[in-house]
Image (cartoon, rainbow, N blue to C red; front, side, top):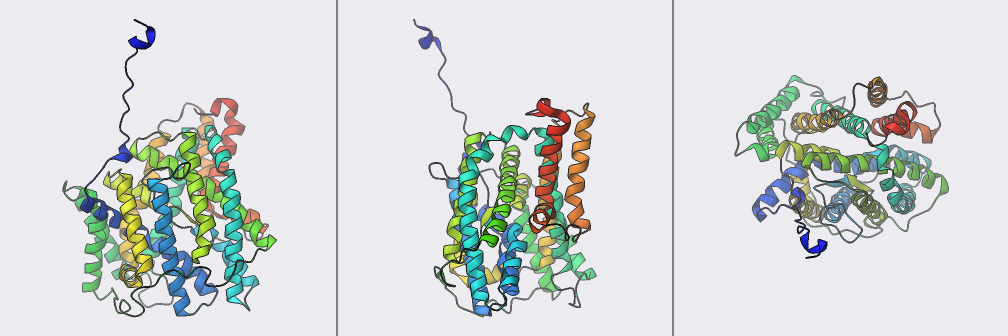
Length: 447
């Protein structure tokens, strides 16, 4: 008998993300994902549209477009095509990281808001193409991300997201009479308490975030802090209108600034890929990293055709996977279908938009905090007998806190550098990678 015949047959272990769930469970879990990230998706078009002083109908158009494109990008990332999509439970949404660049473009085109939008879309398209080309290179540098680096970056992601939850609790308008009120704080604490109680009840643990959002919204409504009056205002169905604002305009300054944003985004998405892989216990090799990055960059290239901005992986949904323990990528794919429906049916979008901010803030404490704790879990694999690792973590976490504590700290730096350092995640990532190379040298790679 030959040696080949003596070899035991290879048994392929099922990947946790490939677990199948019933259609009903997939939809319920998918809705939970969408509710947890909806505010982040609509925030970008609302900020950009307000800065460009777009009328209400056009504001509604770009909000719906953001939801529609986010759904398409999530489908690609979760289900995948050859060389596209990591096939992981990752939800994609319009990235807030590009907001400062887009606002600068709008400021330079104040007299013509439509032209400002066309310049933004042109810059996003070119930057997306550059990111698509660079995706394979970024995948090959993953050896520069040992546990001390990866864990620090993921912890930084969670820390940088927590102020978002606090902002939801406080409210969006500092001049509003209920801004930062005790009632808002009470609603947030109630929503958080519901999530914590549900996590102690086995049958509710996997939908604890959804239950927290629904219960929190009902509680807020009972206190008169939920406004559903705008739900029936506007069209019920609205299909995307390709290039509504006109053909993209390509300006070199806007393009260069957006390319910097995309490079930073590639780093953040790579951290998301490692985070979700660690959370669900699956292998993330170079190919999956490259496929995941390419999917996000293709989304950036296509999004402007539908009047939207670059959709990238959302870190808060990694936290949701950790909290619920639902690892199936098919639940995220079901959520993508919900996002697409929200984009086609603005009425549904207005219902979700009516969820009070304090409710999202309360559940966000668990979601975003779980991302940070996932980073801490990875850090337990680092060598703390090496004092250099303590320095790496200390400096990187300081870099993520600086923009939070002093938002204008980098205002006097060149725009491109201010943009990089102003993103707590990107500055922490750069600090962790560079300090690991400087202090640990070759010994610090993959260890």
